[in-house]
Length: 542
Image (cartoon, rainbow, N blue to C red; front, side, top):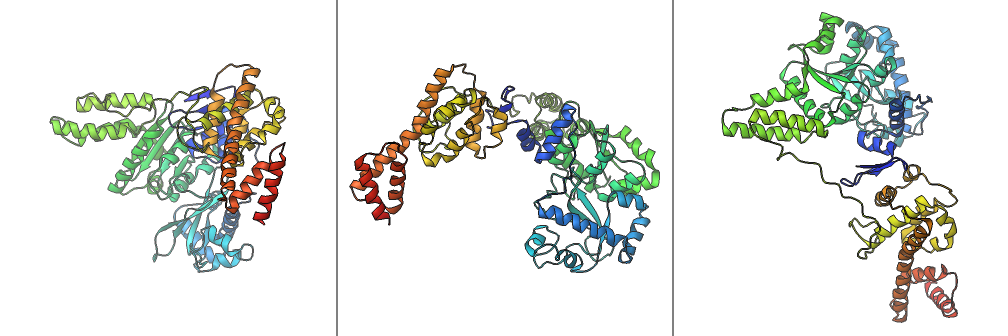
């Protein structure tokens, strides 16, 4: 990984990732743009001015907000009396229900549809995933749990039946606003109370989160009907230093805990502690806190099992360490977990500990980070046809990098050579567009410009150029810039000769006639013979 602080960008020459601080967070942590901005601000100690994030062009977000209001109104109505009674029987107060914006979906096929169809068209309603293909309500006769993102916008729902003739829980399908593998129920509500709590409980259900809140524990979140994912764990780790992953004590709970452990390995880092709590069989966090109270639940932290202990104890017990076959099996299983760890420090520590268990040195068998491919500087290579070719070394790729380097350090080169830049072959329009962004600039900020580049190959080339440290003067940069430009212009001249030869042999099709005509018309000085050729081409095109 190489970072250029002046240019405010990074480049990994091993995996090819590149960008600025914001794009790094978005790609590595799976964040939306606003979440990345807020994460950066928290790190820097800057307060981000809040706006109403819910005022969005995303129709699904708007529909979810409307549905949430309808569900809340229905819970407070006569039709929602059974749902209200259910919540009361679960020891939840009206204040808690309001804090989590709980609601109720009518036990009707078109209860919600009839109310929303007056404001939204059928496609918008189908895209929201609240309705079937035949536009029937998916949530019917259920207590509704709105799932909110970090800005407080409703991105989806969970529904708990209060009748016994269907699945107990039903969750929103994936949509443009909702990815259950990346979201956590209750995280927004936790951060309303404390943006960076000292510790967080991770539990399995909506009611677990709400029951704990009712008893005064306001720092619990839940995964959303799936095994706890590395994306969810990564998101949690940004806001706390200690995580207690809490599971039921039955076999299903133990299996879920092991899955969570595997997904935790990739986010291990200094300053983050992950521990596991197993409740006595027959209890979940909801039932435990209601029977034993707040203090007893908080005391479970004292007997929580650290991730390392859980993993190492599992390996010790999986086979007979006194036999060669047993140690080999443990080593093989241990390597699987070691190779999930990204932190080099933790990878080494776990390698040593697991090596002790199986009495062998595993360090030579552990997957090592790929060696970085250091960037070449001004190179010449074999000719290829396309600048976006994935081949590592080619003339056009190097020419593009040279162009980017030149204008990053001397942006005035663009203004001084506009006429030449416009002669670049039209098939490289994206390259031309990037170059022209420097027109009129006195200085260039690579970190800002890189966000505007959509083509991944061009973005990688631009980043590589920004990372170069050639220390060349403006005269040398100008020569390199002009020579590199000519590579893309000469290509068009080569194409012109090919097309003219085909014209003379009467082998031009209509598309090639237009192409040749465009090439000639782009020239500043057109000869008489070329004027005649243009007229002839026009006749044949028409």
